[in-house]
Length: 70
Image 1 (cartoon, helix red, strand yellow):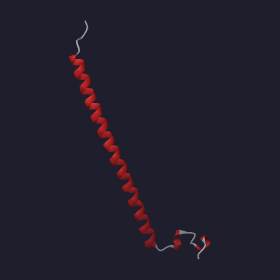
Image 2 (cartoon, helix red, strand yellow; image 1 turned 90 degrees about the vertical axis):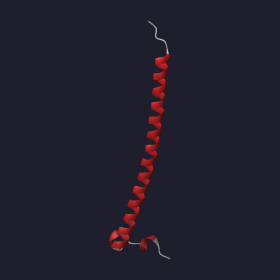
Image 3 (cartoon, rainbow, N blue to C red; image 1 turned 90 degrees about the horizontal axis):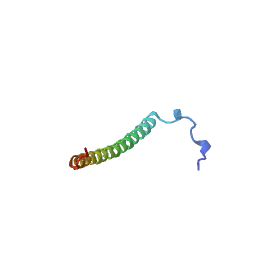
Image 4 (tube, helix red, strand yellow; image 1 turned 120 degrees about the vertical axis):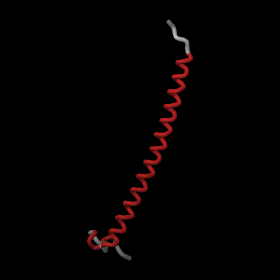
């Protein structure tokens, strides 16, 4: 069985195609994770806009319906 000291110390010991493949997969995973985060942030933004807009419309409606003193 190989011990950890038998493993190559630098990336230069690996074939170039393996490094490119590993880098490509890592970058694709990072982009995929970023897209998931952005998607949920957009859902949150949409919910906040809807709640804020409906709340503002209700506030304006109630303010218009309330009799003003003076």
